[in-house]
Image (cartoon, one colour):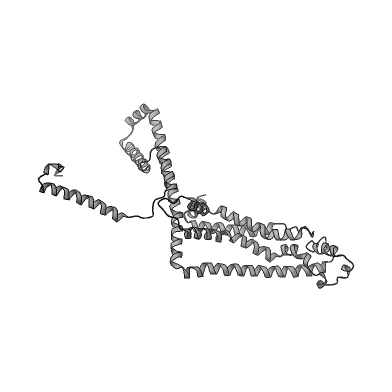
Length: 351
């Protein structure tokens, strides 16, 4: 259990590795689901095409949506998109970068499903068997005299081994369609790989500065939300701890005083240090209405991304210089009584 806990904590700390692991698991799951899936073509002209193409399209759409559901950055993207502007402006390029990143990871499992399906060829055989020219695959003397409707019904039975009575023609037609399906599968893989190469390699070359900016601030938004959640958890934990302690102190005050008379000095110091640390974690917010106001302000008006420590230091230094100049001017003008006097007591020890 400790190993699993350490692995889970590592994945939580590294969001990118966690999402890459989720994408890999989904890709393996899609391939495993297809291998475990029992393909059953209806072998009816009215349903063959819909069944074959539906098997090729609907599961990838489900995997694509599942990739969005399992991605934690979707909620971050939606929150950043819908939040009020406030003191912090919204950059559309950052939102586009986050959406493209989520979409790229969500497309991995659907691409694996489509590739495996095309390489197998069963869905293609079921969908396009009625479009074959059966006279190209051997002796078709039994077809002569059949109407067009009967020929279509006969071609629709090619995917079903038990329903088609001519195994040689069925084998030749199946190999022909599977060959086309595998060619489409390799073309699909080549197209996906080439597109991924263009996105990953060429895009940063043309807009490197903009790419680095959007990448940085997208990471910042994710990290900011994570730290905010952790801070809220720590505050809630300290708030609950202090609230429960105060409750028990109010209920059993006399017993607590009696217990302190019989306890050691070190234990009381340790409890005082723990209580002081819990008080510090409250960050001055000690009421429910105050906390609700803080949370509401964080949503409606996030602080501006401008940390100006030097400006604050200059303002403090200017105030000190102003007070000092005022005191000097007071002495010059003869108003020394307006300056506040401070007394200092110095103690010396010979130890």
